[in-house]
Amino acid sequence: MTHAAGGSVRPDRPPRRPRTLGIAAAVIAFSLFAAREVGFDPSTFWEVWSNPLWEKFWPIPWDWVTDGSNVMGPLIETFQIATISTILGCSLALPVSFAMSSLTTPNRPTYLVSRAVMNVVRAVPDLFWAKLMVTAVGIGAFAGSWALTIFSLAVMVKLFSETVDGADPGPLEAARAAGGRHTPSVRTGMLPTVFPDYVAHALYVFELNIRASIVLGLVGAGGIGRVIEAQRQFFRFDRILGMLVIIFVVVFVIEQASVALRKRLV
Amino acid sequence: MTATTQRPTPPRGARERRGALAVVLVVAMVWSLSGLEVTLDRLLGAPGDAWAILRQMVPPAFARVYERGAVGKVFESVYIAWIGTVIGAVLSLPLAFMAAHNVAPVWIRVPIRQFFNAIRAVPELILAVILIPITGLGPWAGTLAIGIHSIGTLGKWATESIESIDSGPIEAVESTGGRWVSSMRWAVFPQVMSTISSYWLFRFEINVRASAVLGMIGAGGVGSELVSHLVFRDFPAASAVLVFTIAVVLTIDTASAAVRRRIIRGGVGRPDEPSRSGEALADLTGIRL
Image (cartoon, each protein chain N blue to C red):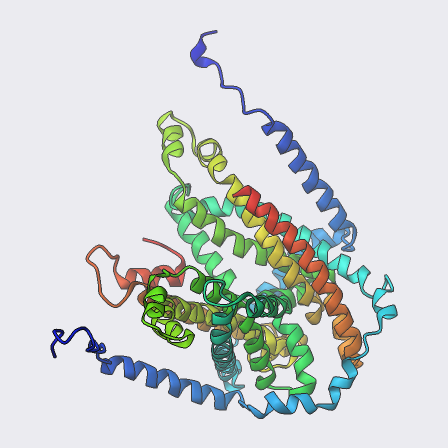
């Protein structure tokens, strides 16, 4: 091939390597197998529109939805769960995160154990924690708060310990070089540097908790999900849709406020 | 008193800000505790109750749970997550090209972005609640719920990565007279595909956890196993299910993180890279040696 002919010659395509094709074939084969296992049924996509159940979604019964005790009460309970769990989880996360960062850990065993434990805690999905807590301490918002506290702790230590890992070690070294003991050194040499990130991560965890707390009630852990579960059993999808609209608006407002606050912090 | 022992004065306003933060936190705590039916004996009793259950969970009844097919249920969760991710990826990719501000006109971009936001606002579980009466109980309901929800996040991430590309190749294609589709295919697609496919894998990791949860309301997967064991207070079985789930979740996280790293960095090994096995260990345990 020559390029002398005035640039009208196409460059050669990079060759397709057999390994790339092999990987693609394996991915497609696995997808086909998995699709069969989950009962993949593309007809749902069009048959869904002719489903008689859709009539049950409309019209939205606004007088039921706006009646304070039906939606707003449980929704406030939901936000109370999210708030207390964020505060407790993020407070607990502060010392644990410092233990989990190689810069600020007091000693090697603490570092290894806290990392391993937190990784296992994070591998358990949030609603599994909720169900476990419901079984342990009984149905209601109390169980939900415990579950979300654990969930917040697990997420927060991941985010914040990575921030600490990436922080400037200079002030901490200075504090240690001046003979500071471990805790005061971390408190004065590291905490001020990373505190704005800590607050920003805490607000992010609060946003996650607001979302997670909405569904807690589906497993009996309190909040608005309990109402959704009850209405679902009566096939009152119109009421569920109305609730979703309210939830959507309130969550959107809270999130925008939190995002604006986070942008100012970092 | 010499000057060297004198402490520098703290920055102005720091004390007031700290005070305000403390007041806000205390008020928030009191307000939220007021609604949660917390009594002192409940609070003091909770760790004891949790400990009592934890003690019954050891040792886990692996053999009994295995015979009931719990491992198959864990894999069903994985299949649900995979197909959900595939559905989300396939549907979100073209939409993302229509939502990025550097390649799409405003009249199509704005509605699609709002569509992504609206989808992201509805949790998978709520989607499943709505879908179950339509599709019936079973894994397909969970798959659809995860697929639909994934469109929102995957679309948003893909849009953001399209918006951060180098515009040079687009100009090059346009200057040769290429149409919109050609510039997407030859200028944008090669730049974003590695990032976007690593987002797909990341979403798959999240979806594995989500699909495990979906089983709790009957949308297929391992959640139903956990719920039924906990309802009958069969704690050894429940803990065995938990251990199976954790093992699969951690394995998938590790494998997926390794593949993602490889996609982003490319296949060429560099001498300054830490060993792959070391990184895999770090993914699995969170411990960086």
